[in-house]
Image 1 (tube, rainbow over the protein chains, first blue to last red):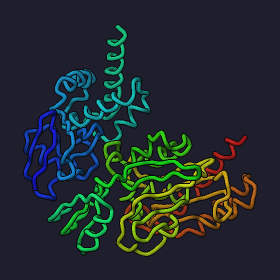
Image 2 (image 1 turned 45 degrees about the vertical axis):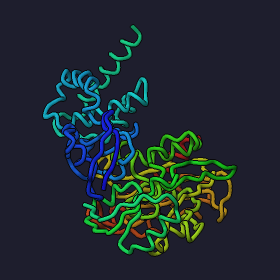
Image 3 (image 1 turned 60 degrees about the vertical axis):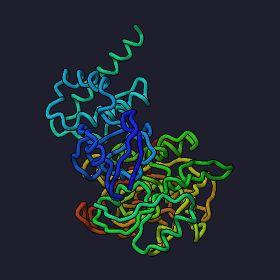
Length: 155
Length: 273
């Protein structure tokens, strides 16, 4: 079957199997930052934004994406670089496998909460598992990123 | 992995119901998160995305919530009263992450009557009704306790505006895992069908959520004090059936259930003082 959707601002047409999952269609369209971690909707490595909301590309049927607006890590390169610096500075960018999904969640957090508390950060990031670093470093990195961003706004 | 041959996105509930009736090996698609975990082979999948079932409406006595409303909307809705949305936030916050909760739907979870469900336990304690396209309005309790329901399209649920106090507790082996036991305790601000003021539901037993009627009756007839809290916890442990699965044994679940109720009621007592 044929589907049409917007991928990172570009209109896409794809010929898919009815039971294909979006993650495979995205990876076929060179969005290799969308990682297939657990493939059971648990780890968050395949987090994308679909119509402005976070979604797991391994859970969404590609057919359901017909007509929707999909953003992957490839569509937010500048933001990813900016946030990535803070993750690196805290030493939590180790194998890097979870980073694209984590960054997509940080961007959604940023959109929803202006000055998040630690509790809010954890609430928004709960769905992103990291096997290397533990979460304390990530929390520090997010806090530093948010603080720097707010200072920029004030200046 | 779920496999099927044809994907449908009907434009009316009647069309969805007809597709469901005409194809024996078909399945309605809510969020699809649990469905994808199995090894099901279907002929047809019927996606309910285009039926305008994603809404929360308020009337004088109740909230009506559409079947395609996702969990994250329940946690963050500004239509629901602050008490009710705080209750949902507490009940749903341990379900994997926001990404998953933005996808899984109320209808998919309620209709499937998943034993592990945190939402179903929370809903049963509130009471209310399930609305099915063909079978009409069915009370939440009889829907959850009936045998396998006839194939139908769940269109919405209706929640009475009764919550004065509500809390959700669960025990898990690790954060965001399935609950090995969950419990919702609600105190209503007006008498419901059975005149009861306390409503307690216990789920992930590992079977689906049920109401603890004897415990509720005891609490409704007696004052809340230390002796009665212990007594209520004992009644709960003896009236509810618990089972064993890979997460916990029935004995362990029984002990946890008694402990969670005690903890909840002691918290209520300390809030009141």
